[in-house]
Length: 243
Length: 351
Ligand SMILES: Cc1ncc(C[n+]2csc(CCOP(=O)(O)OP(=O)(O)O)c2C)c(N)n1
Ligand code: SF4
Image (tube, rainbow over all chains, first blue to last red; front, side):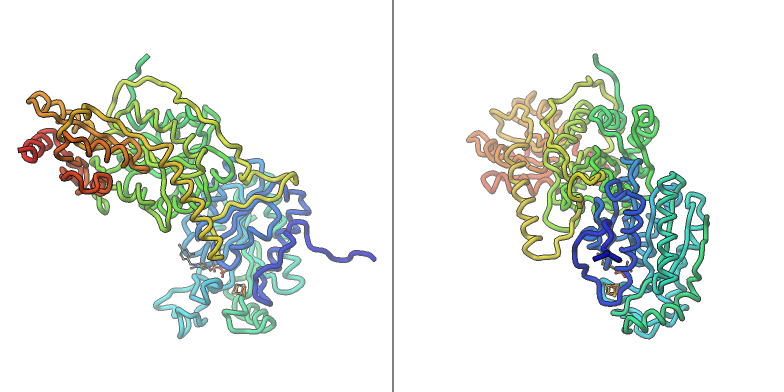
């Protein structure tokens, strides 16, 4: 029998704990395929965040470190400075990266750390049960914004790609959405490019992936995808912000 | 040959002599000469100096670099050490070696930049969340600052845990003649756990402090606890001065111990049998030895002297365990327990 599809060697043979329809799994796959295709599974160290993807240290087949909430870019800095020859990446949610870890991501970019950050923006705190994130849309309901995010009191969502693109040390920043086939293919190209640039020693590379959280959005997986396209994409436009 | 060294610079130089090639830190007085010295000298010795955006970032860089298998150090002073507590508890749980230097200054809050010993609780009780300890070495001279910093790296590697060198602004800023010597090196276990790229030759390594399952988390705590007991057995250190026939015993560490030593000499000159017990490891605290000394029939009183309103005195009381009265000379905010205060209290309690 001919094999037409198989699990990437970049992933461990482990069942994930993600909710049905959650796109964290798709994004894992894209990172894993990238590691495999570039032949760097054995020469990469990944840094897992605190958030739904905390257990990604059990899923990626490369060496992994689990960081404190928001500190993945600092942890990655430590690893990369010790082993400049290895590829180092962080995988972070929006609470992790754009709230508690804002200083760490901005300064890793400022120093031009030769690491790759995969930023999974699902506009909500998934792991802790649906609280407001810095990327929660105005009007979007969250358990700590029960009447919807109010611009007057809670401000407008942070656009991290745009923000990091202004920093000289950041050589590549792209926003993608891994929710349909063309989007997934684009996301894959972006992730691969980011790793390639890292391996060339170009500087800090950043890929923001818009992702769904059907569980905390209170939507079916299919409706979640539609909601993302209708609501998130207009506020978080897809595209390359720095190259 | 003896050379004149400033405390902070001696600590920085000692780290490099111990093979540390990665330093991550953030400026704060009175320890700035440590990062400054390393910024200047690390590159020439093939090392890396990174000025982080905060103490939080610095300690997490330490976590990453240590997890990647390197000898690492960070240094700070009290308010900065407070920010590092998150990283220290993660290091402790993930069993990562690291050396952390605290040149203590006056607190609480922003306090001041004068020398202090008010971070004793924080250093010896873990400081961050959860059940953990760090080995705490307290130098009382620049020579010891240089020696202990070197030893701290081996201790950290042998026991896979953070080790704190706890001194104060006086030790950091003072100059003394020291001799560069290599402390006896220990046999170091290979860092088979390090995340340095498995190259397909071993299973993937994971550096982690998450144990979601209750049984797993308790097991990890028990593992750590067993190690702490072993350390208490093997690594407890202290020094005594004229304590053998003492009827009043000062207990003091670091800078306070130097002042207490002066008080011992003043009292002895008046014919009063005073002695000094100086804990060198603050954790593990030398409680067995202190108890034995306090239990001597000649002993009448114990006086804790420290640059805080009374923190180490708790450990002194636990060790003495009620068999002798324990008194305190505690000065804070940058003030020091002066020899005359110690002499007066000793004469008063002996009267
Ligand atoms: C210091 C600290 N504060 C708070 C938490 C609780 N916490 C865990 S995950 C999380 C938010 C995660 O949300 P996000 O980064 O958006 O990732 P997601 O779960 O949505 O993938 C929070 C606040 C923590 N673990 N540590
Ligand atoms: S809570 Fe949301 S982000 Fe977390 S696994 Fe479930 S769907 Fe995914």
